[in-house]
Image 1 (cartoon, each protein chain N blue to C red):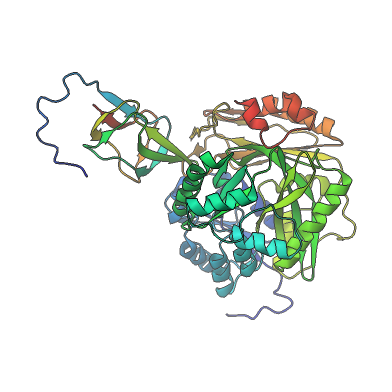
Image 2 (image 1 turned 90 degrees about the horizontal axis):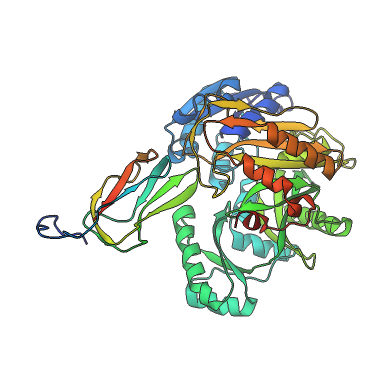
Length: 455
Length: 86
């Protein structure tokens, strides 16, 4: 290294954002506000997107397929070297939960804006994470403590756990590689589906079984690991899902009362402490809608897509805290004086048809965002941009704050009604139906709400 | 295994020709079938991938794959020919 990082240089002066679309743009905005030079990397498909233009410097790293650009660790590290970037922020998805990449960043003498690579590895395997959490006193669902090797083993395990069961890829994430079985007659098929996806998508055939809870709410806790202390910054309800992928989130959760909230915060802090967590992370739980019991689902060792709702009620910029922690600086707020105010809802605006939720790539011919009090739009695109089939369908996150849930809902309806995107199909009409539905507006919904709205 | 394509004379007088086309812009992620293969109704021909979603393209009737117009890694546009089944 040319200069040894002393106390003065511990402040990061530049950061490379190893991501794209709305999250790259969002990280770049905070970095620039903090006076940190922001370096973007982009694929040939993304040259015209706002995040490339808004960075201080942008480096083309490869062709459109993710494996040859945003997942190409070598190309990203080369870009960091060429631009003199001092830190790497991975965003979410892509290389964000790749412990080897995190280690390679550190080995290159750069600051990794994320948790220690060992924490990523420990939480990356659902079986080891489950066992670790159980040891740490975090509630886990009845399930298997070791990989299930074949359908016969799965059947024996399921008989012991009790139906219905969820069959999951140990290395899975993003809802991929999960399959439910209501009874023994569905188990072999669920096992084969999960295993083939586990191999195909994650290169790891390990499978686990867990008791399937229904009706359930999917509630997660935002944590922030500081040296010697883990903070819990409230929960987010992520029960509105299609294909096990989130579509809308809100905080606070209408299904979580003060007692349950306190227990979940405490469990999330224990989960973070068990892996020596540093920086922003999320502990996901499944809450049994009937009993109010909750169990650990997984931990996301990175910034979460839906982090803005937490920012809107707490007034804390989570990306700023990430960058401060990575630089060895103090956080910007008093950890003993965090007050959540009001209610926030995020609606994920996807390029997909609003009925069957099938992908709808294309060219955006018109784009007019809502604005006004309590409205925040984190968008990855603008008019004239091409939405390609290479990446996820997220166009923008429409986030709305209100003094209470009713006000947030009213503002959300107005915002959805005035959001104009033309040239391709979006799920905005679905969001209007969701906001208008009795189930969502009265707050009593669970993870099957989308299935009921779109049978 | 796929046999040599020759020697088909006299076959298929009554067979219909079905063109299978792409429903959206997508990458051809996996080619499951091959030219000359016999496929049943509902069999997966290729798996497209668009926006991180797998979209299997299925045979809508049984027959022989007489033409396979895509290869793994290709990008198809909406309406592009994927396969012909006779």
